[in-house]
Image 1 (tube, rainbow, N blue to C red):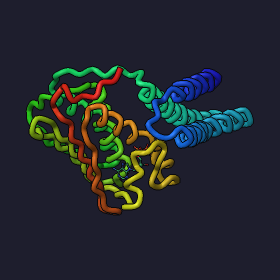
Image 2: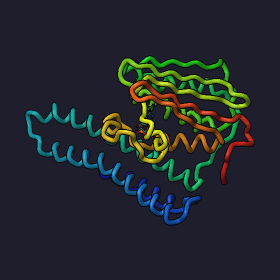
Image 3: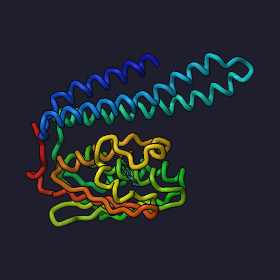
Image 4: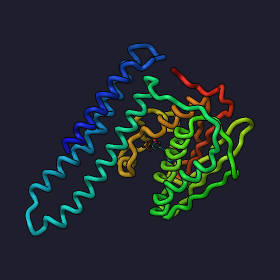
Length: 266
Ligand code: ADP
Protein backbone atom coordinates (compact mmCIF):
# COMPACT_ATOMS: atom_id res chain seq x y z
CA UNK A 1 0.00 0.00 0.00
CA UNK A 2 2.86 2.37 0.78
CA UNK A 3 4.40 1.54 -2.59
CA UNK A 4 1.06 2.39 -4.22
CA UNK A 5 0.80 5.65 -2.24
CA UNK A 6 4.36 6.54 -3.23
CA UNK A 7 3.61 5.81 -6.88
CA UNK A 8 0.50 7.97 -6.81
CA UNK A 9 2.33 10.79 -5.11
CA UNK A 10 5.16 10.72 -7.68
CA UNK A 11 2.58 10.57 -10.48
CA UNK A 12 0.69 13.59 -9.22
CA UNK A 13 3.89 15.54 -8.53
CA UNK A 14 5.20 14.82 -12.03
CA UNK A 15 1.87 15.68 -13.51
CA UNK A 16 1.66 19.01 -11.71
CA UNK A 17 5.24 19.99 -12.45
CA UNK A 18 5.04 19.18 -16.14
CA UNK A 19 1.66 20.80 -16.40
CA UNK A 20 3.31 24.01 -15.19
CA UNK A 21 5.32 24.14 -18.38
CA UNK A 22 2.20 23.75 -20.49
CA UNK A 23 2.35 26.01 -23.49
CA UNK A 24 -0.90 27.88 -22.95
CA UNK A 25 -2.64 29.31 -25.99
CA UNK A 26 -5.27 30.79 -23.65
CA UNK A 27 -4.97 33.87 -21.40
CA UNK A 28 -2.77 33.17 -18.36
CA UNK A 29 -5.57 33.61 -15.77
CA UNK A 30 -7.79 31.19 -17.66
CA UNK A 31 -4.94 28.69 -18.01
CA UNK A 32 -4.27 28.99 -14.30
CA UNK A 33 -7.92 28.31 -13.40
CA UNK A 34 -7.96 25.32 -15.73
CA UNK A 35 -4.81 24.00 -14.16
CA UNK A 36 -6.30 24.41 -10.69
CA UNK A 37 -9.46 22.62 -11.76
CA UNK A 38 -7.44 19.86 -13.35
CA UNK A 39 -5.31 19.38 -10.24
CA UNK A 40 -8.42 19.37 -8.02
CA UNK A 41 -10.13 16.82 -10.29
CA UNK A 42 -7.01 14.63 -10.39
CA UNK A 43 -6.70 14.69 -6.60
CA UNK A 44 -10.37 13.89 -6.20
CA UNK A 45 -10.14 10.96 -8.61
CA UNK A 46 -7.13 9.58 -6.75
CA UNK A 47 -8.72 10.01 -3.35
CA UNK A 48 -11.66 7.72 -4.08
CA UNK A 49 -9.66 4.52 -4.71
CA UNK A 50 -7.29 5.42 -1.88
CA UNK A 51 -10.21 5.67 0.57
CA UNK A 52 -11.47 2.30 -0.59
CA UNK A 53 -8.00 0.80 -0.03
CA UNK A 54 -7.65 2.30 3.43
CA UNK A 55 -11.07 1.14 4.57
CA UNK A 56 -10.32 -2.32 3.15
CA UNK A 57 -7.16 -2.49 5.28
CA UNK A 58 -9.14 -1.42 8.37
CA UNK A 59 -11.74 -4.09 7.66
CA UNK A 60 -9.03 -6.73 7.23
CA UNK A 61 -7.48 -5.82 10.54
CA UNK A 62 -10.78 -5.99 12.36
CA UNK A 63 -11.99 -9.29 10.95
CA UNK A 64 -11.41 -12.24 13.20
CA UNK A 65 -11.52 -15.99 12.65
CA UNK A 66 -13.49 -17.96 11.49
CA UNK A 67 -14.84 -15.50 8.86
CA UNK A 68 -11.40 -14.14 8.13
CA UNK A 69 -10.36 -16.39 5.23
CA UNK A 70 -13.50 -16.06 3.11
CA UNK A 71 -13.63 -12.35 3.79
CA UNK A 72 -9.97 -11.82 2.84
CA UNK A 73 -10.49 -13.30 -0.63
CA UNK A 74 -13.32 -10.90 -1.31
CA UNK A 75 -11.56 -7.87 0.06
CA UNK A 76 -8.32 -8.61 -1.79
CA UNK A 77 -10.22 -8.89 -5.09
CA UNK A 78 -11.78 -5.52 -4.36
CA UNK A 79 -8.41 -3.98 -3.51
CA UNK A 80 -6.87 -5.35 -6.68
CA UNK A 81 -9.62 -3.72 -8.73
CA UNK A 82 -9.07 -0.35 -7.05
CA UNK A 83 -5.29 -0.56 -7.54
CA UNK A 84 -5.88 -1.35 -11.24
CA UNK A 85 -8.14 1.70 -11.56
CA UNK A 86 -5.57 3.89 -9.89
CA UNK A 87 -2.79 2.51 -12.05
CA UNK A 88 -4.81 3.26 -15.17
CA UNK A 89 -5.64 6.75 -13.93
CA UNK A 90 -2.02 7.61 -13.07
CA UNK A 91 -0.80 6.37 -16.43
CA UNK A 92 -3.45 8.48 -18.25
CA UNK A 93 -2.49 11.52 -16.14
CA UNK A 94 1.15 11.06 -17.05
CA UNK A 95 0.33 10.71 -20.76
CA UNK A 96 -1.61 13.98 -20.67
CA UNK A 97 0.98 15.80 -18.59
CA UNK A 98 3.74 14.67 -20.94
CA UNK A 99 1.68 15.61 -23.98
CA UNK A 100 1.18 19.11 -22.49
CA UNK A 101 4.90 19.60 -22.14
CA UNK A 102 5.61 17.97 -25.54
CA UNK A 103 7.65 15.30 -23.81
CA UNK A 104 6.22 12.50 -25.95
CA UNK A 105 8.09 11.73 -29.08
CA UNK A 106 5.79 10.56 -31.82
CA UNK A 107 7.15 8.32 -34.53
CA UNK A 108 5.92 8.91 -38.05
CA UNK A 109 6.33 5.72 -40.01
CA UNK A 110 4.63 3.79 -42.75
CA UNK A 111 2.89 0.67 -41.53
CA UNK A 112 -0.06 -1.63 -42.12
CA UNK A 113 -2.85 -0.74 -39.71
CA UNK A 114 -4.84 -3.95 -40.29
CA UNK A 115 -2.82 -6.26 -37.98
CA UNK A 116 -2.91 -3.59 -35.27
CA UNK A 117 -6.70 -3.38 -35.61
CA UNK A 118 -6.94 -7.20 -35.36
CA UNK A 119 -4.84 -7.04 -32.19
CA UNK A 120 -7.00 -4.29 -30.67
CA UNK A 121 -10.15 -6.31 -31.42
CA UNK A 122 -8.55 -9.37 -29.85
CA UNK A 123 -7.50 -7.52 -26.71
CA UNK A 124 -11.01 -6.17 -26.03
CA UNK A 125 -12.61 -9.48 -27.05
CA UNK A 126 -12.77 -10.89 -23.54
CA UNK A 127 -14.48 -7.76 -22.20
CA UNK A 128 -17.04 -7.89 -25.03
CA UNK A 129 -17.61 -11.62 -24.49
CA UNK A 130 -18.15 -11.08 -20.76
CA UNK A 131 -21.12 -8.85 -21.71
CA UNK A 132 -22.29 -11.02 -24.63
CA UNK A 133 -21.58 -8.11 -26.95
CA UNK A 134 -21.16 -8.94 -30.62
CA UNK A 135 -17.92 -7.32 -31.76
CA UNK A 136 -17.35 -7.10 -35.51
CA UNK A 137 -14.68 -5.71 -37.82
CA UNK A 138 -14.92 -4.60 -41.39
CA UNK A 139 -11.56 -3.62 -42.89
CA UNK A 140 -9.48 -4.15 -46.02
CA UNK A 141 -6.82 -6.91 -45.92
CA UNK A 142 -4.12 -4.27 -45.75
CA UNK A 143 -4.47 -0.66 -44.78
CA UNK A 144 -1.29 1.28 -45.42
CA UNK A 145 -1.01 4.13 -42.96
CA UNK A 146 1.45 6.77 -41.93
CA UNK A 147 1.66 7.83 -38.32
CA UNK A 148 2.68 6.59 -34.92
CA UNK A 149 1.51 2.94 -34.78
CA UNK A 150 1.57 2.78 -30.99
CA UNK A 151 -0.53 5.92 -30.53
CA UNK A 152 -3.00 5.03 -33.32
CA UNK A 153 -3.53 1.62 -31.69
CA UNK A 154 -4.04 3.35 -28.35
CA UNK A 155 -6.67 5.59 -29.99
CA UNK A 156 -8.51 2.56 -31.35
CA UNK A 157 -8.29 0.79 -28.02
CA UNK A 158 -9.80 3.79 -26.16
CA UNK A 159 -12.74 3.98 -28.58
CA UNK A 160 -13.40 0.22 -28.57
CA UNK A 161 -13.11 0.05 -24.80
CA UNK A 162 -15.61 2.90 -24.40
CA UNK A 163 -17.99 1.40 -26.95
CA UNK A 164 -18.03 -1.88 -24.99
CA UNK A 165 -18.20 -0.19 -21.56
CA UNK A 166 -21.17 1.98 -22.53
CA UNK A 167 -23.10 -0.78 -24.31
CA UNK A 168 -25.42 -2.91 -22.21
CA UNK A 169 -25.19 -6.71 -22.28
CA UNK A 170 -26.18 -8.31 -25.56
CA UNK A 171 -25.49 -5.21 -27.68
CA UNK A 172 -23.28 -4.71 -30.73
CA UNK A 173 -20.01 -2.90 -31.39
CA UNK A 174 -18.76 -2.52 -34.93
CA UNK A 175 -15.41 -1.22 -36.14
CA UNK A 176 -15.07 -0.15 -39.76
CA UNK A 177 -11.74 0.89 -41.22
CA UNK A 178 -11.38 2.24 -44.71
CA UNK A 179 -9.17 4.24 -46.98
CA UNK A 180 -10.30 7.82 -47.28
CA UNK A 181 -8.64 9.59 -50.18
CA UNK A 182 -5.02 9.76 -49.15
CA UNK A 183 -5.93 8.98 -45.56
CA UNK A 184 -7.73 6.51 -43.33
CA UNK A 185 -11.12 6.59 -41.69
CA UNK A 186 -12.10 4.73 -38.53
CA UNK A 187 -15.71 4.26 -37.47
CA UNK A 188 -16.51 2.84 -34.06
CA UNK A 189 -20.21 2.26 -33.69
CA UNK A 190 -22.17 0.87 -30.76
CA UNK A 191 -25.74 0.15 -29.75
CA UNK A 192 -25.09 1.53 -26.27
CA UNK A 193 -26.53 4.09 -23.90
CA UNK A 194 -25.77 7.04 -26.20
CA UNK A 195 -24.77 10.58 -25.21
CA UNK A 196 -27.09 13.54 -24.56
CA UNK A 197 -26.80 16.34 -27.13
CA UNK A 198 -25.81 18.84 -24.44
CA UNK A 199 -22.96 16.59 -23.25
CA UNK A 200 -21.43 16.01 -26.68
CA UNK A 201 -19.40 19.28 -26.83
CA UNK A 202 -17.71 18.42 -23.52
CA UNK A 203 -16.89 14.72 -23.71
CA UNK A 204 -13.35 15.39 -25.03
CA UNK A 205 -12.54 17.56 -22.03
CA UNK A 206 -10.40 16.16 -19.24
CA UNK A 207 -12.38 14.49 -16.47
CA UNK A 208 -15.71 15.14 -18.15
CA UNK A 209 -18.13 12.25 -17.71
CA UNK A 210 -21.66 12.50 -19.00
CA UNK A 211 -23.08 10.69 -16.00
CA UNK A 212 -20.63 10.74 -13.11
CA UNK A 213 -22.24 8.19 -10.82
CA UNK A 214 -22.95 5.73 -13.58
CA UNK A 215 -19.55 6.02 -15.25
CA UNK A 216 -17.73 5.59 -11.93
CA UNK A 217 -19.59 2.27 -11.62
CA UNK A 218 -18.63 1.35 -15.18
CA UNK A 219 -15.03 2.27 -14.41
CA UNK A 220 -14.33 5.49 -16.31
CA UNK A 221 -12.48 8.52 -15.01
CA UNK A 222 -13.02 10.81 -17.97
CA UNK A 223 -9.54 11.00 -19.53
CA UNK A 224 -9.74 8.47 -22.40
CA UNK A 225 -11.31 10.79 -24.95
CA UNK A 226 -8.94 13.68 -24.12
CA UNK A 227 -6.06 11.33 -24.92
CA UNK A 228 -7.89 10.22 -28.08
CA UNK A 229 -8.31 13.86 -29.13
CA UNK A 230 -4.62 14.59 -28.51
CA UNK A 231 -3.61 11.59 -30.67
CA UNK A 232 -5.94 12.65 -33.48
CA UNK A 233 -4.74 16.26 -33.35
CA UNK A 234 -1.05 15.34 -33.42
CA UNK A 235 -1.83 13.41 -36.60
CA UNK A 236 -3.63 16.48 -37.99
CA UNK A 237 -6.83 14.43 -38.10
CA UNK A 238 -10.40 14.96 -36.96
CA UNK A 239 -12.73 13.19 -34.54
CA UNK A 240 -16.51 13.53 -34.57
CA UNK A 241 -19.33 11.84 -32.75
CA UNK A 242 -22.93 11.14 -33.70
CA UNK A 243 -25.05 9.83 -30.90
CA UNK A 244 -28.60 9.25 -29.85
CA UNK A 245 -29.52 8.75 -26.23
CA UNK A 246 -30.61 5.17 -25.59
CA UNK A 247 -29.76 4.07 -29.13
CA UNK A 248 -25.99 4.26 -29.50
CA UNK A 249 -23.00 6.26 -30.65
CA UNK A 250 -20.69 6.46 -33.61
CA UNK A 251 -17.19 7.92 -33.38
CA UNK A 252 -15.71 8.90 -36.74
CA UNK A 253 -12.00 9.54 -37.04
CA UNK A 254 -10.21 10.77 -40.08
CA UNK A 255 -6.43 10.54 -40.24
CA UNK A 256 -4.69 12.11 -43.21
CA UNK A 257 -2.07 9.92 -44.79
CA UNK A 258 0.39 12.56 -45.78
CA UNK A 259 3.37 12.13 -43.48
CA UNK A 260 4.28 15.79 -43.88
CA UNK A 261 1.02 16.75 -42.17
CA UNK A 262 1.85 14.88 -38.97
CA UNK A 263 2.11 17.43 -36.28
CA UNK A 264 5.37 16.37 -34.67
CA UNK A 265 6.41 18.95 -32.14
CA UNK A 266 9.84 19.34 -30.66
P1 ADP B 1 -14.30 7.47 -19.34
O1 ADP B 1 -13.06 6.94 -18.74
O2 ADP B 1 -15.26 8.03 -18.33
O3 ADP B 1 -14.94 6.53 -20.28
P2 ADP B 1 -13.75 9.17 -21.64
O4 ADP B 1 -12.97 10.43 -21.71
O5 ADP B 1 -13.27 8.04 -22.48
O6 ADP B 1 -13.81 8.79 -20.12
O7 ADP B 1 -15.25 9.50 -22.03
C1 ADP B 1 -15.87 10.65 -21.49
C2 ADP B 1 -17.37 10.40 -21.32
O8 ADP B 1 -17.99 10.32 -22.60
C3 ADP B 1 -17.70 9.09 -20.62
O9 ADP B 1 -17.65 9.20 -19.22
C4 ADP B 1 -19.11 8.82 -21.13
O10 ADP B 1 -20.04 9.59 -20.39
C5 ADP B 1 -19.07 9.39 -22.54
N1 ADP B 1 -18.81 8.34 -23.56
C6 ADP B 1 -17.63 8.06 -24.18
N2 ADP B 1 -17.77 7.09 -25.10
C7 ADP B 1 -19.07 6.72 -25.06
C8 ADP B 1 -19.87 5.76 -25.78
N3 ADP B 1 -19.35 4.97 -26.72
N4 ADP B 1 -21.19 5.69 -25.47
C9 ADP B 1 -21.74 6.48 -24.52
N5 ADP B 1 -21.06 7.41 -23.82
C10 ADP B 1 -19.74 7.54 -24.08
